[in-house]
Length: 548
Image 1 (cartoon, rainbow, N blue to C red):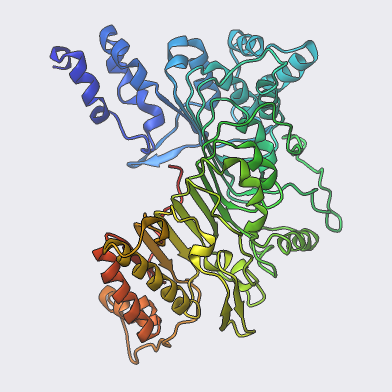
Image 2: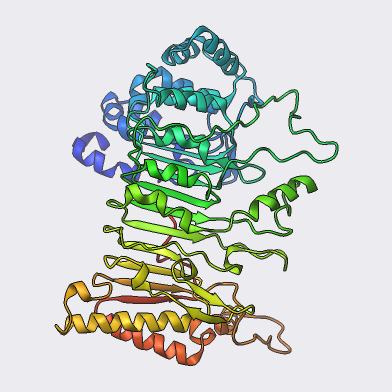
């Protein structure tokens, strides 16, 4: 039946014949369709680009529908792709679900000597380098195989590495050579998007290790999660040795480099750093990004106190070391402002936010518990359209020891550029809400006067404003104390929702403040401006953290 359809129709229905890209079996599409396509050369040629557009390297088994699916090994997929130039050319997306550094496969794998020699030849290695690489490939080090595999994908546009272990000398070697103008090695000419996330436990990624990626001329979007500033390794505890590794599985020690010299300005336009602590490294990187359009920096200060060692199985000495670092990593956006000078003409979206952690101990101290450090004047950013920050990182706020508000010396229009279209203000607690509402009332009145022709556009406060979001701190003490109903044996969903209504903004804010918010909401709506309150019961889905 498919044979009767014209090619244009077949290409349009392809997405309905294959599992979606997020489906666990997407990487193994050949199991579903390839045998059928290969019986007809016309179909295989027609669908080649779609069939092999994305390669997903997965090292584990997946239980599904009562059986266990064991995908092909990473090394066998690499060999098959290297064997077929058409597949390598068709690959545009590479997803590596597990990135192991210097670790052999548990199951024996004999590399095809022809493929091995092809990989070594493509890398244009010196004799000493070739011996080093050959030893790693023969030992089946997955990170070495994948590093050379990247050179075989001329049309790769997106690289995503999940659960990445840090410190691969093989990836570092390839990247350093690719960005060196004096090195003949070429590769990754189309790579425009990079997304990196660390392994779940016990690993941290250093941003400095990925600086060579930022120097690739084609790279535009860079997303990394869990990255840290580089510090020397923590001291070993009593009877510990930082260099101890299993003899049967030797892994190279992580040796993250410092910020390398940029051979040319980077072309990155979107930089997303989620759950990171980079107040030392990031100011060294930003001056090299003159084309930056979006900066999303989600700061994780990891808190001081006891929770730095909870659940991580580290020694007291290492816990103390991490605790010392965390005390110096409170969010300070003012160190980023001078570094953004080169991107002033192009920057359109700026998010400087904090990761909302669960408080493990009363001794834990987070950024939100400390006096806020303001970012400074943003009027010199003429293209800025979207801003998301904590209120205390914008306005100069003075508080009493009990966190009650005593004074606010700035206004939003004193700090923020008038070209803004969307403003998301984090951590608007009950003490700050009346001040924020008062300033928004002045913005509203200015917009109403402009609409009535009483004020010129250049004198109007935020004339292009379309969205304002006010977010309550989710861990702020409730205004109305919750009392559990007596003699309750079971709780329905409706009852649970009703019991939690005291945490909603309409009940948690002071009644007079909520009435004022509702008045602003109605009047802003008449001007085409949306005003939202994200209370403790809601997520921040209006401004999700994602690469756009």
